[in-house]
Amino acid sequence: MSGYANLARLDLAYREDRRIRVRDGVELYYETRGEGTPITLLNAFFLPSPSWRVFTEELAGSYRVVGYDLCNHGKSSHVGPEPTWEEHAADLIALLDGLEIESTHLIAASTSTILARDVALRHPDRVRGVVLAGPVFGPRGMRRQRQVQRAWLRTLESHGIAGLYEHMYPEVFSAEMNEAIGTPGFLGFREAFSALSTVDDLVNGLNRAMEDVGDPAVLAGVERPALVVVGDDDFLMGPTAARELAALFPHGRAEIMPKAGHVPFVDDAEGFQAIVRKFFEEVDARA
Image 1 (cartoon, rainbow, N blue to C red):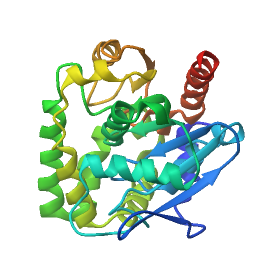
Image 2: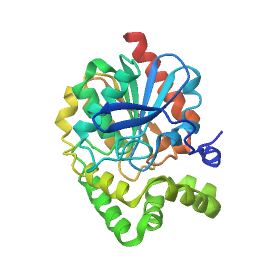
Image 3: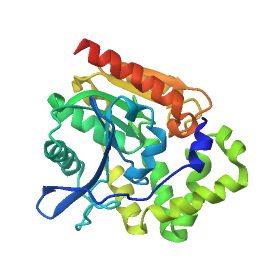
Image 4: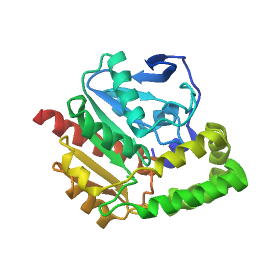
């Protein structure tokens, strides 16, 4: 089934109210599917944990797939200023402790690739392998990412969430998908997007994302295997830069997904999961 068909099956409902206390005043909403070696899904600020379900169904048949909402987003606690990246990383480790997960694979998309990188750097004993889909840090920094997000912020502040959606849509999603789903898909996804977050959540998240230094030199310290997955129609990073980025990891490699955009699993969920499964199987075989 194509990612475009999966979009019609998006189920963003919170089916249960599962929460784990990770620090004073902060409880994280989480959900878990399947059994086996854990995979933890890290959300970009724009997407809550339920949005992963239709794009990870096959993985949930062989792995224990854990999703959760970051603090100050979705159904997790909202407490004051947006947590720092260090606090988000500590929250994830506390969540794993609460779920009695000793080590886990990580799958991150867009802005959450910052969090995955930082957790792998600071807590290598808790990470098995890392998948970075549409990373927002590059082989020579990511000035472009900050420029794009500043423009998104201006649109959000002047035109609200609907205006932000119209600004982001042709950038984030592939040309192939845009043509395939047409106006009905554009309008349907806009309704879902507008219900996902508040303006404050998005403003806080975008501002936090821009604070990442993005120093490529730190990638040499990531001990765990890393897979960079980029669509060849990603507006932020092309195939050449993706391969250069992967080469900066001691154990890194890149996969380029044809006709896919910034969130490549939306374009081809089955292809993405096949790539991820093969990578995790190889990582576990060497462990």
